Each structure stands twice: as C-alpha cells, then as structure tokens.
Length: 632
Image 1 (cartoon, rainbow, N blue to C red):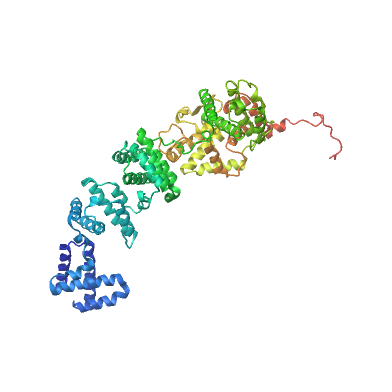
Image 2: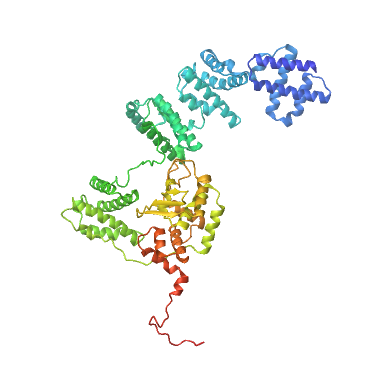
C-alpha cells in the first residue's frame, strides 16, 4: 500500500499547486482514506477496477452526491497513477472559480487576500470571494469599484446554497471584501452593508419608489447636504456607544445599528446627506415591509436625530408624532388655552394637574367648535347648559372634576375676552351630592397572601412589588409618595423615612420598620437595575426612569389578583385600621398618616369592632321601646 499512499500524496500536492481550497483537498483525502481501509480489510491491492467496485457497493448507503464526488476523486487518483498528473478535462467539475477571474478584478482579490494573515483563512476567502467576483465579472464588472447596489441585490437573490449557514458564510466573505476595498479604493461602505440577506429586502432603490417620493427626495436633497453622508456614518458609531452608555439591551442596540445602516443605504443611493425629514420619508416607504417593528424603527430615527443635534440622548423622552388634540383646535382656542396653562404652571401646579386642566379645556373647546362657535365672545349660558347635559362621564364625581376646571378657565376668560360676561361661569354646574363610602380594608386571608408573597419573592419585579406594598401596608404611605421616594429620603442610621407629601406638600417623618427596611435592602441589592436615578423605584428597562403611580396598583393586583376589592390605597386604610385596633391614639394615627384633621381617621372607627361593642347603647336608652318577644 506504500505506492497507493504515494499516489494519494501526489494528488493532494497537485491540487494545492492548482490553488484548490483546503476543503477540496480534505474531501479527496477522506475518500482515499476510506478506500484504503476497505482494501486493507478485504485483503485487496489497489486498482482502478477495485476502487469502482467499492463505490458501487457503497452508493446505496452514501447517496447520489457523495457517490458522484467519490467517482471523480477515484478518476483523479487513476490519472495520477497512470499519467503522473490530472488532465484539465477531468478537472472541469471542480475547477476553482478564482482561476477564471481576469484583469483588475483578479488583482483586487489578491490585494484582499494579502491582508489576511493565516494560510487556511486566505484559501477559504479565495474560494468564497471568487464566487461573488465571478458573478460580477459575468455581468460586465471589470473592477470592484464598478459594483452597484443592483448587483448586490441580484447576487443575494440568485446565489443559492444547500444550507442557510453556508449562504451566510459566503455573504460574510463578500462583506469583508467590500469593506476592505472601501478602505483601499474608496468605494461606498454601503456596498458592504448591503451584502446581507436580512437587509436586502429593505433596500429602497429609486426605481422602486413612486414619483411623488422621488420629487420629495429631490426637494430635500440640497438642505440635507449640510449634514454630509460621511459625517452621518461617523455619527452612527457615536450613537450606538451612547445607547450602551445608557444601558440599552443588546437587541435594542442591534436594531438601532441595522436601522442606521439601512438609512445610510437610502441616503447613498439617492445622493443625499442626512436629514430627519428624509429618514421619515424612507420609513413611510418601508413601513409595510417592517411589519410590527416599524414603531421601534421610528423611535430610533427620532433618537438618532436627538443625538446628532445634542450629542446625547434623553432615554425618558416621549416623542410626539402627531398633532395633539389641543393643536387640532382653531387658533383662537389654542392661544387662550396655552396662555391659561402657562399661568397655572407658574402658579406651581404639578404636571398631572396641568394635564387635567388641558384635558378639560380641550374637551370644552371641542364642544364649542362642534356647535359652530367661532370665538369665545360668542359663548352663551345655553352653551354651558348643553355641554353639561351632553358631556359623558362614568361618575358624577368625574363630571364635577372636569366642570370645576372648566369654570376656572371661564373665570380666566372673564378677566379678558369675556369681561362683558363676568358671571357666565356660574351657568356650568360643578357640584354632586355627597355620598357615604364603605371603608374597605384587607381581611386576614388577604394579609396572609401578601405576607407569603413577600417571603418567597426573589425575581426583580417581585422584590420591587413587595417593597412597595409593605411601604403602604406597614407605613401607610400613599402611592404618589412611594413612587417619588428617593434614596436621600431614607436615613438608615436613624431608621426613618422623611418626605414631603405629594398630595398635601406637608413634611412627614416616619420610623422605618425592620420588615420594610429588609425588603427595601433586598430590592436595592438583588432587584433594582444599575442606574444613577435618585428615585428608589424605577423601571427595569431602559431608560430606568421613575415609575408611574399605577405601578403600585399593579403590585397589589399581582399579589391578590385583578378581582381584589379596593386598590393600592387599601393598604393605607388597612394600616390606619390596624393602628386603631391596636389601641393607638387618634392623634398618633393622624400624625402617622400625615393628616391635619381627624375627619378621615373617624371613617376607620367603625372598623374597630371590639371597641364599637363597648359603645353599644340599650334600646331603652336610645328611646326605642321593645315589646313582645319571648321571655327566656
């Protein structure tokens, strides 16, 4: 078998000299190794006929492709044995594509291969890139610099492989080749970005856009050139680093990178620079192809524009894409509402209060416009009466809350444009009948379920929910005060929490129970994301901003279920009721709740059943005679 081994080595050396890929050489040697094992086990010597018999025996097990390849390899072995070489006509089935490259394009491949350090990688890249370059050469491209986006798209559509992984490998090689010649020949880096089957369907060449969009691009082109494409490309890396700095997830950063590169292709194909208007035009054309992900793409465009303008982003910023209900009103409404809201803002109203004022005024003015009113001078008392009758609300309290704010807006107008109607606001009713509410507190079963949840909580969301609920249940804090709680408000050494209440703006200092302190510590240590936010409770996703008040209600529903009676404020009522039942004085309870009077505390007295029984009066003393009945 020594002669057989020598022939095998000769075939391998010949293939290497002809610049065949290492994978092709390995495939030959694998075939010859299997043949040698077969001959040794069968006690046979090598001959072309015995090799063909071996292939015939194994063809049913191997399949058609492997059998055909092995047959070619045996022919190569026989040629080397008989002729001392392999003739060209027997190489046609495996003739390497790079040998067909000519002129400049072959030199450009050589330049790229010279930049690769390892021999194996160089040979692999030679085969993979040759397929791509041969495709270009067959379509009349004589240099990489002549490549267009149309060539790239056509290559990705027509280049077929047995597996997706194999296709990805060849696309990656094409990307590396084009990126290299971006640096060496100055071709567009977009040609490298385009060598990606995931991006190819979203490339928007001018030929596929409607005439109206082409005209809009032409209109915006000159303005966009003030932000050159090269500057936009450099800004992409800075924007992605900014996302990392703000701790965005890998998926968000990956999506942002893909969006920015797709937009680069759009700008490059249309010969423009960067502008947000062009980006939004691109998005409008691409929206159907993006599916449900178009909103995230839109936010990326807005966020990048903020970075390009300011050099940083504000993760908590809410971007507005449509006119608000206020801006849809006539100018005579918008101007006065805006003036009024600015006045209330200067008076120190919170954002939520101003939002309520805006909503009330917009609702009222929308009604006026629908009634044909064209100026505040035209408002009559009949309009206010009709508005009150037709304005829908679920509760009388909700209706009253809106009407109170509308009356205040009317009073503001009466100081100016409605000065001739100083009493007009009184035509709008804003009162509702008082009603008694049944005070709801948690029962023993619900308290047990809350305690069990707090004990077993381990996930970040659970730790946050436990801490918020215990602050309400053990300290009586309102939801608004909990979500505004800051690290600076907690004095761990003195075991106290000191805040200024959001609702009353009065200072409140409370002792920090051990159970609550432990829960807060566990949340900060094991659940809270790394963030420089001064607020204790934050979102667990970027931008890690302060939670909304609704998070407290969601926490109690997560523990007790959606159908539980009462909301988060029930924790505060339960706290006060438990203090009463424990014999704590009313004044102490008032101080603990941060109240200034005992009006609210009196509501809880009826829940102290033990002491209420001590106050029972006889029917005779109450003046209620009792006659009849049974005498026991």
